[in-house]
Length: 374
Ligand code: CO8
Image (tube, rainbow, N blue to C red; front, side, top):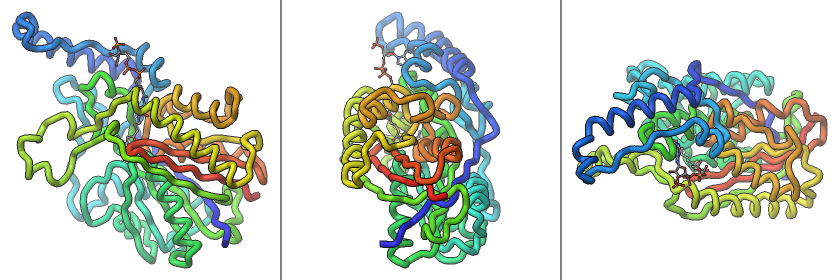
């Protein structure tokens, strides 16, 4: 079987950052306003008063200090509390494609490849902007890549599932080199009026170039030793937004048309699923966990990552062994583990081993074992 390598990665970080302090201040202004407006019903016991959020809770429960967003002002406006992103004409590049193209250009540069070298473009992300034409075909067109492109969505696991799909297509001879792009505008699906989840997500885009290992000569190249994917149906992370919303008008405006989750259940059920996936994958590849130089885990929650790293390594991770980007980026869905890999892999040396791992809605989980090539 021919070896496949990740030869470069890229990152686009949106221009605006929202601190926990700013986010919680906006949320609490909304709560005060809601409770004042509904004072009579609240006093009569007909409406439950809303509770305020807290900066301390957010940091302790999640490890998040800030998040990047593509639009800030309206998220922080207590009367709006969602991003307002101006619609673009069909002739303009869509915002999701634009973010993806920026990340893709960096990935191509780091891989020392031109768009003409890529004949397969996948946009793999949680939050696709439209039904069709595929965002991936728009990215392919904007970059000028030959070949084919398509979109895929496996929620937070989209990047690792995209990695496996691309590696398999190259191995099978259906593509020479692939670009997997993960643009995520999570702020568009987040309910900023929901105290339990308003702090969780941020916006970003990442990109990955894959090609046969024998051609990946650059210093950012990592051989993909193996990929393993798993899914198990669960309603604990769900978003019912979709094209049938207008066919069921009674559902319009209900909170389930945005991100909803049973956070505690997710935590309890996903931690063992992911640890078992990684440990089993390493055992099958005959790699002892102590031989791993790094874990680039999905960035959903610091406590979750600490748990998984401990289960895989059998001890507390040493500083830097399981890098965290969650503090400044928050949960960026599929892009999280790729941001960690992009920012914290260049310092490793030839033959160092690591695992890129994602997990999220579905449930879905993906493990990718990599070895530094040069
Ligand atoms: N401020 C103050 N207090 C709060 C707040 C708040 N903002 N929120 C909750 N509390 C209170 C609660 O009311 C509760 O109080 P009490 O004990 O009196 O009932 C207490 O704090 C504890 O609440 P929780 O049990 O909810 O808190 P946890 O400690 O469990 O932390 C988390 C909540 C952070 C949500 C945690 O459960 C978690 O991280 N779970 C895992 C989440 C996860 O990984 N989800 C994966 C989602 S990723 C994915 O696949 C989605 C893809 C789609 C992307 C869509 C983009 C939008």
